[in-house]
Image (cartoon, rainbow, N blue to C red; front, side, top):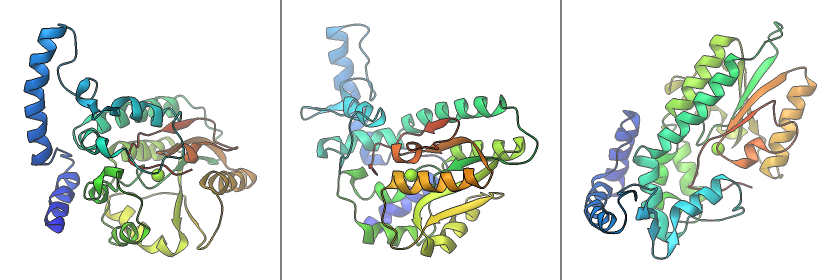
Length: 274
Ligand SMILES: [Mg+2]
């Protein structure tokens, strides 16, 4: 059953449809009717459906407020998505909202990159995170509660070694644009060195090519994500590279000097890495 569902979701994501699974669609339709009736009775301008309205409130938890607090980094060090928000996060991730939010981030990043004056020495780089930035693990999370269950390294790594994660199309658009502009992409990931081969294979399968470096964490390396990633960026800078941009889905991707001349935060309401 789980395998069947996974295949379905992989197919949806791989074709960039990113649509709701039928179970979620039916829930939306039923709630839409209820919401529409209530909205007309209460206030003509009240949102009828969607995550901006009361659809985000389940069991006393305002999931849209929770998500905003997560994205703004007001909420930190959280372990799991509130159980009552599984449906909300599922709708957000698969229903189009996530893609729209990502698109705005990438549009801004491209506008910024297009305005840069490059030095001509080919030293400008842009740092890309991998998971939930360049590649999407949504097929995994969609079958593991959309972040409502505690992180399971064993099952997640089994998914990673399949090398089947789809690209995030918005990030790929930025990646290709930067190469066309003469800015070199550098992948910097919390994935470990022993996952290099499968990570390269996954990236290539998804159409990524032309990156300058792929920096993975040494196996057994103990440091926070901020310390590890900022240390790697420092090494780049000391080697003469100019980090003109840095994009990731976690605050730990973009905090810690040298952050890069400008940082971009993609949405991720499914997990937190400190
Ligand atoms: Mg990430």
